[in-house]
Image (cartoon, rainbow over all chains, first blue to last red; front, side, top):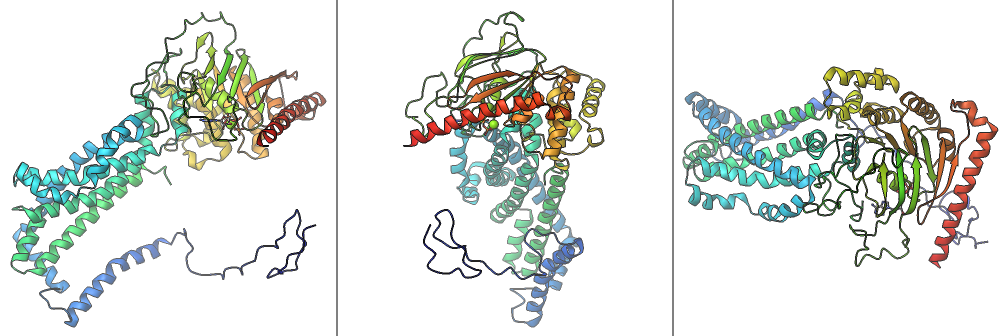
Length: 293
Length: 330
Ligand SMILES: Nc1ncnc2c1ncn2[C@@H]1O[C@H](COP(=O)(O)OP(=O)(O)OP(=O)(O)O)[C@@H](O)[C@H]1O
Ligand SMILES: [Mg+2]
């Protein structure tokens, strides 16, 4: 028999160790106290969820109101919400807000569409065929690390100050990330689905269309959602540098005249439009990916 | 999966087996570089149908995962120390007659799944050949339906749409297709669940869908790899009776892998016992029980005797294998 353990276990009577074990039972922890807080992975009720969502906007807004009302910060640096709303209303009345928004949205729409049209087939190929992966991953992985904004001077030299250089910047900023993210989604398809489709008589192009595509579509839309935010950022960056219209251009104009209230109004518009795009894509994803948990 | 496996090329919509395209979808690194893969040699002159006799025939089939694409061992691939130094399957001879129900049993690791994947065409044997009606099997195809342990249903398709998958690839009218799907769903008792997604079905229901899907193209052989392994005893019993009924109704040939000897004896007309290292057939036992099997069959003395016999065989070879492993370890 094994020698009795030298140290008695913390709790409970010491039992003789069996099977040659010369250690006692492991120490016990006291059970966790029952808690009313939501547990990890718990769902909250819809009303709580909406209340929290409202809070997430309201708290920063209140902080802003308090900060500007207290006079702790100069109005030139942090205009009050009321001043920003006034500035926004002025810009809306004069029509420049809408024309700027329209030209920015047009650029994002076009650039993002081009980026998606390039990156989805590329990513699909990389994720589903290892030769495409081997061929493309090094170069795309490298290009991805080159900051798109650093291409602005080059793009202006190549393409001039017109629309094409801004759209090119957008494409450069989005296409590599979206390709790699799409490839990652496609690559996750379970092998047994591919195998079982082949045994059901599906040919390669049918497997691609009827198995890999539906499987990957929700994840591909998720990737687009992430990258739509990036595209929206890039269009403003492009317009900050060189443009005669657009929301980024409006910001640089306002900066020249120290109109911080205008800058804030444009920032709010940018944020709201981004949020709307995000929500639309999320609704689409939830429709397409109803089967996915 | 290791990159030493040899997944065969794509699928076939036609009833015959021909070399498929050789660009294989799959995770990077999971397959060998396929861009330049050539067809695996000229197709053997197929003996005319019936010439070989027997629906499914394995002749001297061997599978060595360590071998390279052309059957030669790869350089610098001795395998991990302690790894078995013999092929996974060696010299398998097996004939399954049309309409037969054959069960394969064997210890874990004896190569049951590998054998089934060879027949399905998902792997190429490194020795010997697999033929179906005299034609060589060179890739996966709808004349050999496969059902695996997990079911592998398409999670975005409803039960009915899963069953319809193979039929959608064939030139069938929509009406014809839905008639067939409805019949299959009725056959597997899932009519009320036709519009449910796999995530909303129980494990047993999912397996029924998988079986219906495999049957939809009316394959010559249905291959089942431990289809009821993950089910509870009660459901498993139901599913076994169900499978016998489907087999009787459709007259299809069934080759089923299981590690449950009782299941094999209850279901099969023949039970093939595999031993490990290398995986080989050590017994091929006819089950002489009446075809109308029910729960009383399980209490039948002939059934019990046969079951013990097969269990003893499996155990004997398992023990012998364990002993060999222990000796090899030192
Ligand atoms: N792709 C692979 N590459 C290398 N070795 C493999 C591969 N697939 C299977 N093997 C080996 O072949 C042997 C047989 O595997 P297989 O899956 O056929 O066993 P099995 O009889 O189905 O076992 P189980 O009852 O546990 O499912 C195992 O030793 C396994 O490690
Ligand atoms: Mg197995």
